[in-house]
Length: 102
Image (cartoon, rainbow, N blue to C red; front, side, top):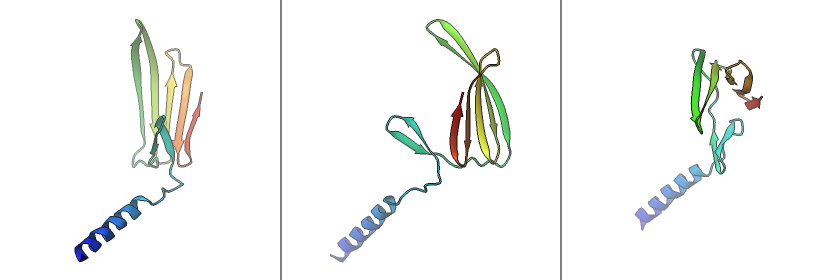
């Protein structure tokens, strides 16, 4: 009987820990309908700046886009550009959340 009480107490403690609310200051994003994730704060020890050319073939046509990534301890910025240098999108993520623009 005592062992059952201890097990029930441990189970109740575990369930209470899972029922806690999330920190409202953390940003969240939708991966797909019905799937939401909490994003970590944009913190890096050393800033990074990278670029990559993405190429895809769709229905026999080849499409390219240059993607630029800049990240430091305060924000992360992702910019997509056409081969002609026209900005397609600009996504900025900082402690306040994500801000998309085109």
